Length: 331
Ligand code: ING
Image (cartoon, rainbow, N blue to C red; front, side, top):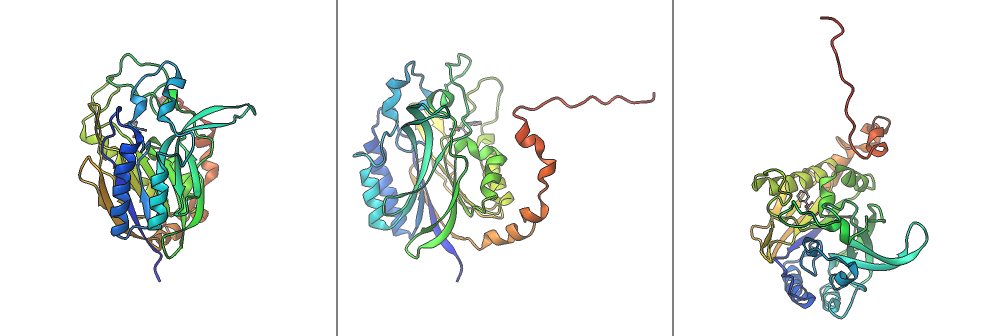
């Protein structure tokens, strides 16, 4: 009996700054219903799925941004999602902005802000929580930019590592090794490898990615935005012998474009389903987890082939360092 799980990428179109959570939740409920009708057992929503991508807007006092965050999950606004997954027996990935009152590394309990995702079981229990480690952009208003990308202002670096857990999903209760990434994380092979070293089988990730480069310090052809995103996800899946479900929040939010192209990728790095709009769109694929075995037992048999003693720089260095200069020893 193959270990096949049916997964859905529930891509969301734009959420305008003026639109409250109930607008997003209403659209998410329709996607959950369609996912159920199409036999999905796991449904993946985007990063920051409940609100507009607010890190594009500068706020001087962070407390004035609290309304973008969830202080509890569920809340009255998100409870309908929990009711729906219980009704349909669905396991979901939800990306959201989290405010938590908890101790920091110095033991001081304070108000902390994270870019978070959770995997939620049909009964509403949180199976796994992850907080985004790779925060792109900047913390202060950047005058050179066409659009701000203030994730380093609105969020702390995630403090939960890259966890993987084996949990039952779907009506048959198939046990699956689940892991998560959020958006920019997908561009860092180290993140995928930490998941791969825990035998992850299904990496769930949401993203909000501008369709054009906003840094304004050099031209980047627009088609490269999608190429780089898919390259990163396909490589991550291939090199760690796992499936990936990567889900966009897409479309024009207050005039600023995010690209769609949500994809589901198999352990051979092949795209097996792709969204073709920049709006609410559901793509579904059967993922036979037995496909992870080939890579894991041959080319990416980590135990047999990895040489950590040669990888020191990867954890010892943060930035890159200039190489030694070679000079000919004879004229
Ligand atoms: N967004 C973008 C991402 O990594 C980005 C930021 C875009 C960084 C393109 C580099 C290049 O997909 C988020 N939210 O991380």
